[in-house]
Image (cartoon, rainbow, N blue to C red):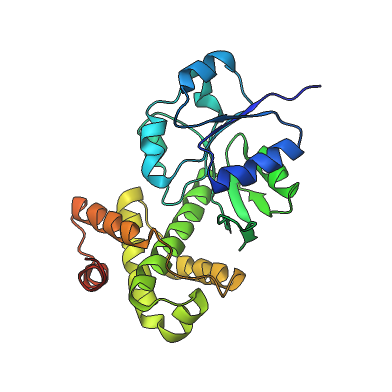
Length: 256
């Protein structure tokens, strides 16, 4: 039996990895680029198997606010820095995957640890990634998903922001700058608590971050998005009246 189509909104590096897996599993794949009208595509393909939103973090809100009605029950999100309010404000209930592999231009993907996914389409994501030898696992509850999203946020923001100050790899960051790492991570966790209105076990989150460090000890701390991540974190902290001393110090030292 012919499988239903999969829609991919945004065709960057990460989308290309998923497209390869979907095609290998026998799904027809239809891309939606910036130049295309998603409403027109939805009129032609009103009932896809899933709709993968693979745009950058800075573009996701604009995309979610304009998702065609026909596609809203089939959404999948994969962005970093996600929390439930990012989709709940649009009255959406997507499948979400916390991606723990990286894909850079001109290089194949590199897996750090298994990528957890939760939602109606999670099993398809797990099977799809397995078809191209990327480990993923299906979560059983929304609470598990929230924890996993916060772990990824703590990892990304801590390494990027501390990396602005000291550079190096994640193993060097922990070995040589544990106090700084704990301070940055602690402030990021406080921000995550504010944004999600939930409490978290700080040491459990740091342990989970260190587990990811062990998945790729030579992973560079600072990507090109690091300055923007720091700026966003401080903007959110100000909005929620949260004073993040260490992050402010790094910003004054490292941001022009």
